[in-house]
Structure formats: structure tokens, C-alpha cells
Length: 389
Ligand code: ADP
Ligand code: MG
Image (cartoon, rainbow, N blue to C red):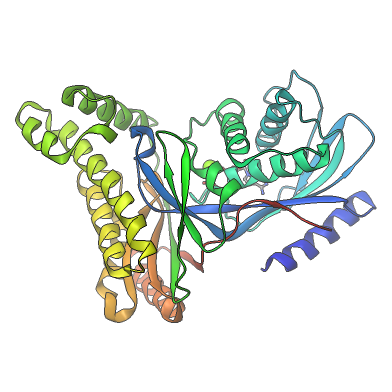
């Protein structure tokens, strides 16, 4: 569905629900991380793009103090709440993302006033493409517009991140909200998580596209995997005498290897290598050195799987299938993306072969696992904007 088609459908749905035309609108994209996994909480680099899938919200002021929001696909559970400085979590679950953002806006003196709204999204929910950040950033963009105020990219991203921490109980980094709020069409973003500063990296070559394949497997986690890895990284940094693994080198790590617990060593081996790779990959992208970018992606996958141990058999298989097609088949590189234990792979492919590559990998994957994957091809999309209606 194109942006225009999505807008037309949503406008229609809004009008049927509220019996009037919307006056304000905003959209914000989902994202995929090209490289830089489990580096954010180690003060490292990440390198995401915004994808051509977005969350859109249309609204009209309702001259009350109440915010009413429907979402397509969840029509039976609209969210409705009074604007107040004392907003807190409640039902439905998804409404907490909206509430958290409005709460953050009010804290900054941005009051959109009561409104009626409708949301639609082409970002698949819960697939690791950050539908949650797209929702938050779309709401923040709308609220600022309705209040007639400006909210710059950094403030918007921080406000939305805080909403996810405090209202959705998800202690996420800043990447998702930052890229959704601040992406530039045709560019990836090299984000320095130590200082929260972005650098836009041109992916100018239209002959290269990004293929996202969802393994459609999500492994049940005990919940301790993520905090455990954070802890192991902190232990490694302490052992090496640095503030965070951003400040350690592979030479330092090798020298300390014999005195380190082997699991801690392996975690650090991934992170230190990955931080370096991510900065290098961004440089190589600007030079259109796709083969070398791809090699970094394969290396990233290898250490995520072997040393950081967050991959799955299904993700490994998807990467293996991409690798088998190789350069002659139009594949530059491939890796798991997101926190791991399921979700998607991201591959860099030749645009004119992208569909063929996707079909081939999906068929082979389904044959071997009996699981149907889902896939789509994207170029780097633009970040959040208001819609002129
Ligand atoms: P991801 O961000 O990877 O898609 P999350 O679990 O972080 O997965 O966020 C998914 C949740 O965000 C959904 O369960 C829902 O509560 C909320 N959400 C995202 N998009 C929408 C939407 N368009 N409408 C309603 N809720 C949404
Ligand atoms: Mg999310």
C-alpha cells in the first residue's frame, strides 16, 4: 500500500467513525538496523534506516478535554482518556504508548487539546521493525502540530523513548525513536549512542535495496537473556578497566583473554568488533563499496550467532541461504537484525534482483522449516512528518 492509498483509506475510516473530515495528520516510519547490534548499551554505534512502512494518524480537535483514538485492526478497543498531568498506565495496552507520549508532551508545555483520532499502520506489529516507535513518534508529531509548537528531532526521540520506558515498561535505547523521527530519505543514520548524535549516511545508489525477511519465529525467552548480556558486557568492561566496551580494543581483549571467563570474553569479542564494523560499514556505504559492506554484515551475523549467542537456527538458515546466492545472485550481505531469538534478517541486495532473491530464499526456507516467512524490499525512507490534508 502506498502512502497515498493508506491516507485515502484512513481518511475514509475516520470520516465513517466521526462523521467529519480530519484536520490534522502525521506519519512516522518503522525501521530496520543495517548493522550495529547489541552495541547501543555499550556506548557504540548503530546504523538503521527508516523503512517504507509507516504509522499514520489523522485527527480533529473536539473542543473537549478528552483524547479518543481508534486503531485499524483494534476497532473493539479504542483508547480514551482525559488530558491531565497525572496520566498513568491503563487499558487497552496499546493506548499506553499514546498516553505516554501525551504525558511527555504536556511535561514540555505542549498541549494539543482534546481531539478525535484514527491510526493505521503498515508496520507489522511485534516483528522487530519498531511499530511501537512509529506509533509514539507519529503521535508526538501530531500533538506538536496540533499545539502549534515545534519539537526537534532529539527532543521528540527522547520524549518517545521515555514514553516507552515509563508507560510500556520497555527499557529500550534511543535508536528506534531517533531514526523514526529524524530519518532522511535515501540515507542510513550512523548514530553514536554515547552522545546521541546522528550522522546521515547517503545510500545514494538506487541499484542497491534492503530486503527484510521475517523468520516468523519468536522464541519464548525467560526474560533474563537481555539483562544477562548487558551484565556480561559490563563485567567485560570492568575487567578491561574501561568505562564501556566502546573504549576497549580487540588487542586489549586478546591480552586479557586468559584471565577472563570464556562467556564474558565471547560477549566482548562480538561487541568490540561490532562497534568498529559499524563505523567502518557506514564509511563504505558512502563509497558505494557494497561488497565490503556486505562482508561486514556477514561478520556481524557470525559473531552474533557464535559469540553473543542471540541468533536462532531459523535466522542462521536465512543468512546461509542468502550467502549461497552470493554476489553472482545479487546478494551483497545478510545478517539477523534486532535483539535476536527470532524476528527478521536484513540483506543488502541488487534492486533489480530483489524480488527474485526474496522469492528464492523464502521458498527454500519454507521447504526446510515448514514455516512461511514474510518479506519485503525497501529503500531508506523519510522520517516523521505532518501530513497536509
Ligand atoms: P515492535 O515495536 O517490534 O513492533 P513492540 O512489542 O515493541 O514490537 O510493539 C508492539 C506494540 O505496539 C503492539 O502490541 C501495540 O501495543 C503497539 N502498537 C504498535 N503499532 C500500533 C498500532 N498501529 N495500533 C495500535 N497499537 C500499536
Ligand atoms: Mg518496539
